[in-house]
Amino acid sequence: MKEYDFYIVPTPIGNLQDITLRAVEILKSVDIIACEDMRVTQKLLNHFDIKTKCISYHKFNEKERINFFLDFLNEGKKIALVSDAGTPLFCDPGAIIVKELKKHNYSVTSLPGANAVATFLSQVPRENEDFTFIGFIPRNKTQIEEILTKYKTTDLVFYESPNRILKTLEVISQCRPSATTVIGRELTKIFEEVLIDKTENIIKYFQTNPLKGEIVAAVLREKISVDNADIEEKISALKTKGYTAKDISIILSTLYKFNKNDIYQKSLN
Image (cartoon, rainbow, N blue to C red):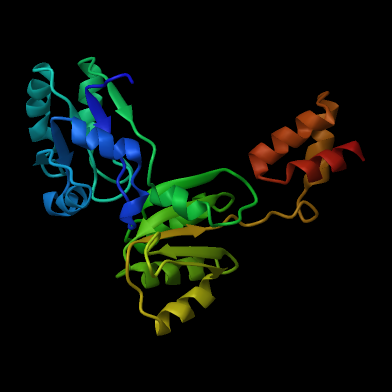
């Protein structure tokens, strides 16, 4: 197996058994583990009898650690980076050091493993594969409304705190009243819960049920009806330019998020 200088290692988002065999092997073999919170990481290491020394690496000391890591690697030693849960660089520290390492030609690799977004979306039936992940959604109401409007025709995925989710749901309900919202919390844990419903119904549910744990949420895209749009005019204009039915279906589905098959059939007719 090829060896690297720096390993990005995902850790479980809840259930400790979700760590991979390779992740355990790498964490045992490197010379040091860079982690957000040593207390959190130590629990994982103890569970799998990993004796490797840890060093703190978080958003408040990212730049300070650069020279330390470069000197450490220059001695021929290996480093693994972990976050408290999930895959580093997904709303977690790591981007700064990875950029520096690549600039200095150190070899970097990332292991596959636990990720809250992938775990969440694999339980959500969606019409299309594309989605937009924005990390933690802003706290400001105006900014939330701008994002909801901007991504109206794609599935919008974000993280949110249990302390703020109800306020965020209220904004979604006001800005996109017909939208379907999905809430996933405590993923992979005993009290895992994934709700798919109209936003107002989810608000009512959480008003009477305790809301705890890490949250991944999505506001699903709104369907655009081909029948209610000026689609015939657009098809006609493209036909006069010599575009085929296949070309037209690709162009209009890309620009306006219309269903590609519906556009294709209308173009043939």
